Figure 1: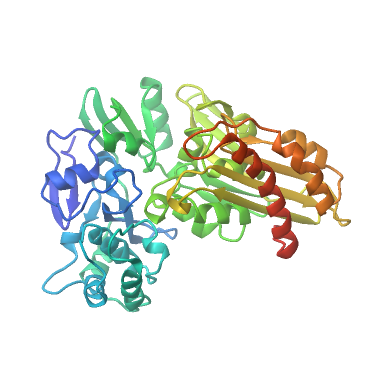
Figure 2 (figure 1 turned 135 degrees about the vertical axis):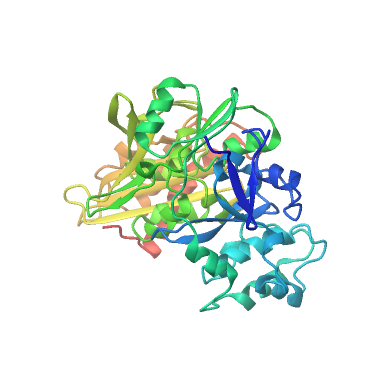
Length: 470
């Protein structure tokens, strides 16, 4: 087996005696690339942002910003990484020059992360607030940083060493095996290869974007004897859109899902815009978000409200499980040993006699994109021509040990008129439907109020600006 390597700023680095549980940030700083900073170690502040060459939805190479603090080193074997040290030559890169001219840096600790986020966006054509939403600054203030972004956005016909690198970049992600017994990383390149591995190692830890497992690696809170990456498996990276349904590969990054499904499912569009920041969405996946079975996972309520189903694969074959039956208990799912989520399917067809679909989602948190939900909710209501409810899906996160639907209220809504009287009739019932916990984020009573009030908010929002999903 060839010695594992990665390429950093055009320099090939061969890995020797480095743990498979090491993060990319740790390795970079140990190797002398100390321009990349460690801030929170959680993927929240963006100080550790680097660029990686990956593929966009058309399969063309592009620069993508990621949080190096929560990326396992094995995930970037054979990949090309660019850090802040690698973007300036004889002169500053345009994004660096813009930061200088606008006074976008004071202490400078966060500056490399901002620079690298802007660098990636620069070559995608739009440098805006979204590209730096995952970067926090505690002293400069965001106005000069935004001015720097505005100064370099929309640049066309860029021709430099970095565009040339993209033109020659390989589009194939290689497989790899790295590490020693009890500290190994595998990256298979096909579904049969993965399932074969799982038959022999049913207790292996699966990762795709590793945005959850990466927290344990970053803080050294847990050791993983065998990590198996899913991100090089084509069967898990698919996206099929038909008039009847959408099927999403479990390991397709959320940034790709967000771009390619824009406008199809309004509630998914909304929640993805609040799902962490771009660096996280460039790595995180729907399959990973569901498989963790977190009761506060942002995407679970949305997919529950859309009647999503999962295709589960193992060496014994495949089976389809409705998402509403997937979550069994706190952090427990219907997955069997050596079984994986292959894809998520969302139906697009409406029930018989339905003429309008209303759908939206909501996330209540203290810091918007960079915080865990206090309560997340997603609603889908189908109406007939007389504006009576013929199907209702009310799904919540953060109010029970699992993501859950208010099925009793859904049944009570059937046949009722879509008006304020119906909503006010349901609110007291919704208030008592769940028994959430009190924790540091919110009290149980506050969460119960949100369960009811978010449904009323949904009604008023749909009345003032109805969102039809056909």
